[in-house]
Length: 351
Ligand code: FES
Ligand SMILES: [Fe+2]
Image (cartoon, rainbow, N blue to C red; front, side, top):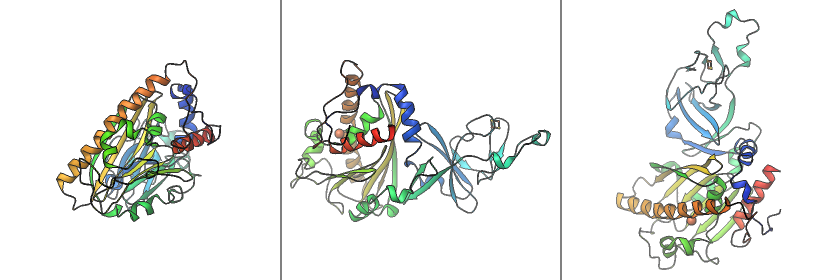
């Protein structure tokens, strides 16, 4: 299957636990994903826990302020080491009190002096790559993967050119949600606006969703949509402000970056599989510090309305593809070119 192919991915891939297992191994453990905000792990000697796919992640900032990411699994018998977040001078596992330094080295294992051949240097926490873009923390379990700045391509420049200084924004809220749908259905739904005119009346009254105006762009691992407002938008929030057009980026496999027209703003978060037919998402919303509360409330309500409409769509697709009597769908490679790109990346990664 190539990017010009008109077939969708096999529908069995949206229900099969063996496919999800492979996706965890070959995709979620090998690509950069958004995991946290910098302010969640701001001070020296602090920790914060998150996940990439099904991998538990421990973020640690040491006494000098260096940020590190580890597999949040004890090297002794495999307990999750930390839960939640907080400040610590050392990291101690609650099971048998193995104690790690903030750089991941094993400092102490009770009674290890009674064990022959016990080498603490071989038993540090497993490191992962961690990096930031402005206030956003990303992790990649694969130490050999390309650096974050490279895979983000020009997303940071695009966002900056739109008038959004990510370092100047204030964090607003985290919206969490779960869907009865495979993570790829959520992602593919995000990647096309072919459904917008049909399924998002409010969004389509505000934005020009015609194929002439609504721009689709493909990078290596990023897929981008630019959504200009209509010349005379009918919108339930005020679209005027520094940001002229909406931007909706996906960083493969599942990190979304959204900028809405109007006052400077951004929302960012991962799409995380919980089970073949269950997906978790969160979105961290940020706005310009001087954006007024009415504008914020109306913009969030507009976005929530689109999200509620998308929930119905993706859960309906899941119910359809799980029926098992059709092998695949018919993609529209022009209108759904970002979906085609996503599916090509999936095939490459799983091949
Ligand atoms: S499992 Fe962590 S100390 Fe035993
Ligand atoms: Fe949608």
